[in-house]
Amino acid sequence: PSFSQGGRIETPLADLAPALSAIGWKPLPKNSLSGVPIDLLVERKGKIIAIDLIGTLGEEGQAVALSKSLILQRSGVPLYALRLDEWLHRKNKVIEFFHDID
Image (cartoon, rainbow, N blue to C red; front, top):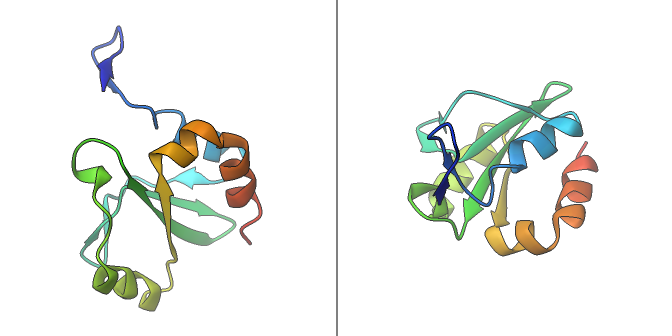
């Protein structure tokens, strides 16, 4: 990570939430759901999805265990894994994928 002029830590995924907002996904302020740590939780038209960021520094780079993924599924919140390299090299495809989720 690097630091912006305001002292905030900038990561390669710093533009993910704004990109999702631009296609209607509103980031939610929660960092866990049903006791499962979530990297990014977003809502659009009453549907909530969780995004697991993989390949980044720190806790958010750790993949969610299968058992915790099943807990999310049972709660009705699908979990989508997003690798850092996918975001860096295929942003348009990633945005298109999240755009097409009903």
